[in-house]
Image (cartoon, rainbow, N blue to C red; front, side):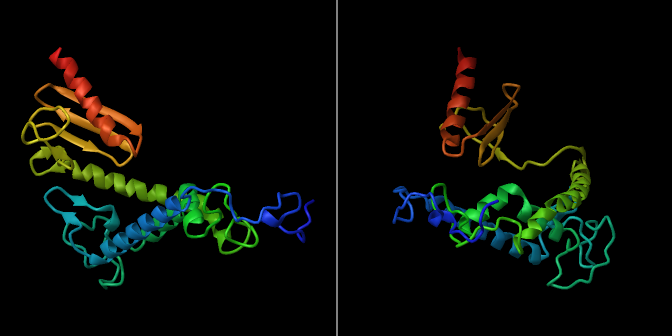
Length: 250
């Protein structure tokens, strides 16, 4: 059994006696910094959006944003509260107040986000080969980190909430003119503007990680390209489209 009274971390017995905090000479702090900026921006946007209590529902197509699903407040606009409206209509009570806390806790305790904010906000550790920002390492065995072990229970709640979101999606496929879906992506309106090949009328979408798809009615073509290449996504998309349309020309 390890002796808990002995120094830990970089001062532990048997470790090299190096005065420098780390021998890394690169900008290892850049990734934690970008993570802080990204998460703070997202949390700020989400908080503002949740308490706006407007622009969350399109009655004609039954588009209900997940931030307001299920809408349970007496202030919900007509047609958006399919599961009843019984929460008080107050500015400080989100319209989906019964589900948002569980989604927040599910995200907060998931393993991917743990790594992100442990390194960026908690400095535990900020990067590989860089010492922990705390004198002692207790992992998730003490409060407040002990609550991370409840992740599985928040997952159960998230599964139930996802069923509600699935119902919202099914409802959104039925518009006044029949079954279909709205255009949540780009439409090419003229030729020669984009560096990538394509036809006028082409509809396309691309994600931050590199995954993309496009529909070309003129060529009767539907393409799905799945990738995780954040830094090269633009170059790869253009190259892929040029190769595909180049094959047609030949």
